[in-house]
Length: 284
Image (cartoon, rainbow, N blue to C red):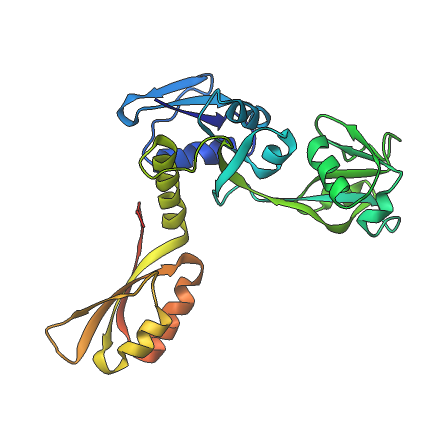
């Protein structure tokens, strides 16, 4: 039975559960449940602290897990990323009092407060910078004001919280993070027919379904090459004859983010009957 670790709380929890549900797995109904058995899919879900998931996966206690890329790298565990899942995106950056520091090398000899000491130590070492890393659990924005550190390293979204403390980001981002599927590094390459391979394929289907839509339209046969250039699909669009030989029907996958622009281009080209359908699930 495949054992999968799922965030039990925090920003990744709800989205991870929803993705697993869309992938066809049973999820918990009660937030107090710690283990959910799904015999139909030969799976057990273990709801764990997001920060601990990479440790459990790396040790082989569970076979796979969903956690943040930042938490994976910070853990230093024997686990590796299998695929990105497209949610929980964040940027990890350094910040200090506005105008004081400008580049990562300016951190040399200073104190850096963070909730991700492993990640920060690795980044500083790669940059050839020696500094003291101060581990803090929870919010670190007040560390400079309280005199605990000279620099902080943390997840930055809008930057409003930093500005309220008189801080500003500097240097290049440490990391761009998002939710990822992970497995133990020592395990052989993911095979399509093993449990982790099936899980990866199902989650990839969910990511694809969220990213693309199906677009159907009719277009004059004389314009088929131009129309297919607008909607090339993943491999090639499907083109079918209509009763009227002067027209053909086209079906293609189109990025969801560009749906309306593509519809406008097709209409201006001469296509009609343009329809868009959501994808509930897919395998590519």
